Amino acid sequence: MAERLSPLARFTPVSADDLRIAEIPFLTQINLRVDPKSRAAADIGVALGAPLPTEPGTCTSADADVLWMGPDEWLVVGARGHDLEATIRAAAGTAHVGITDVSAQRTVVAVDGPRSRDLLAHGCALDLHPRVFGPGRCAQTMLARAQVVLAAREDDGFRVFVRSSFAGYLADWLLDAAAEYLPEGTVTSR
Amino acid sequence: MLLIPCPWCGPRDEAEFHYGGQAHVAYPENPAALSDEEWARYLFFRDNPKGRFAERWNHTAGCRRWFNAVRNTATNEIEAGEVTA
Image 1: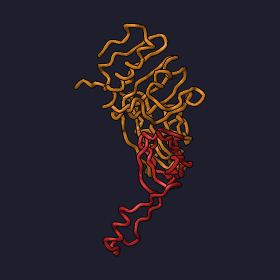
Image 2 (image 1 turned 180 degrees about the horizontal axis):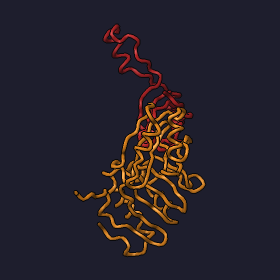
Image 3 (image 1 turned 30 degrees about the horizontal axis):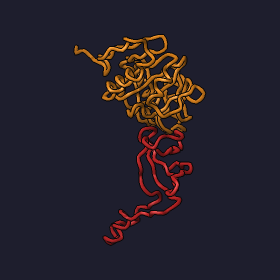
Image 4 (image 1 turned 90 degrees about the vertical axis):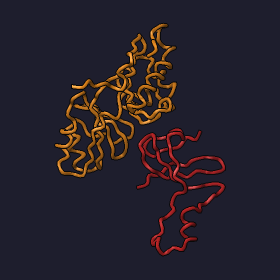
């Protein structure tokens, strides 16, 4: 079987006391489009363990993470190999619902640690203060001119969803921006 | 840089948006009946006021939804965006 390489397979994870950067490859990602007021939306919410979040910029976590992408659009994220598509399809039945596997579209970079907000703020215009962008918030925005989906998690952790073709650039940028938060010699060029 | 209020995502940088020109320009009911001049007027002629101007924006780097906003062309002040179908 052919070897499967993630977009950041050559990226060496960075780990320091205040900041950790690593790729989480091959997560299952499903783009879901459905009328939020429909019966199908409620059924899918039940199947995923939590109602689809309807407040802009929020996400829920149960069997899978569900990120708000638009008024009738969500990104459902599960573990590698998790057959979310089948779960959602079964719940949706024959209703008018768009279900697309977009797992290969983006890879995920985990940015964790007390310095994560400072690091992301180098290239992101959003207010990332925990009061505004705490756990459970997500946003589609630009990070260092690359389109990303940001999701805030507990303990100053972030998941940065970036398109596969931009991942190498963004990882390089993150390493460069992180230099001041890492002990000397931590960052080795790829 | 303009700070544009997306009705879904809240205020965001102008760089996240795509401009859609003047809002409320209706498609002709019977395009085939128009003369060339009328068609050209529909296609290319837009208002150019000094002051309040209703225009369309698409939040391309965010929720990817179209909306209308009123911008004052003299001061660049933008009134809250309005959701369009």
